[in-house]
Amino acid sequence: MKSSFLAIALLLLPGCAAYQVGTGSLYAPDVSTVFVPMIESESFRRDLGERLTEALVKEIELKTPYKVVADPNADSVLLVRLQGDTRGVLAENALDDPRVLEETLRAEVTWLNRRQLPMMQAQSIPTEGALAGLAVGVGQTGLTIPEAAQTLTSTQQEAIKRLAEQIVGTMERPW
Image 1: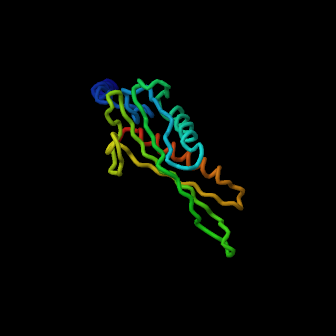
Image 2: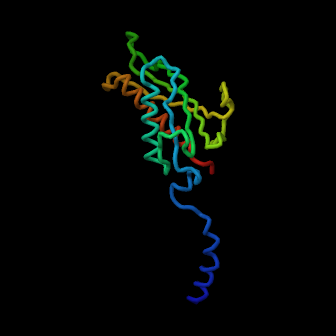
Image 3: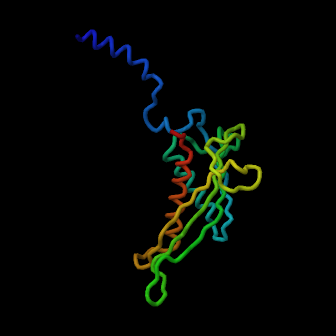
């Protein structure tokens, strides 16, 4: 009985050889380094591109097997363009004072390999220039509640962190 069980196990084991376990299976195996140039921002608010670049680099280093390098000749290049940010009032009190504010960030992401071929599935969003049709649109929001001692800066940082998480999520291979 033991020998027949062992024989069956040995016959089935080679069928499992191609399976990958862990987070390594979520990402492209032929990429080990990523170059993230400074994010261009079309927003009039100061330092949004720099703050998003910093958050994105930290998120890539934390959650992916990739190493972020300063060399444009890396295995891949992650291009991000911050298309804009909007603020809006979601709730007011009886005196028209804002009680809940919303900050929305929108970005366009293009991930290219060394041969300048896209590494992620493009979605149909309007883009201009040489990378038209290769970009993926992402967006994220953050809420401010002044009574809870939240500031617009903390809301902006929350939206930046969420946007960086969403961008890194687009770097995963499709299932």
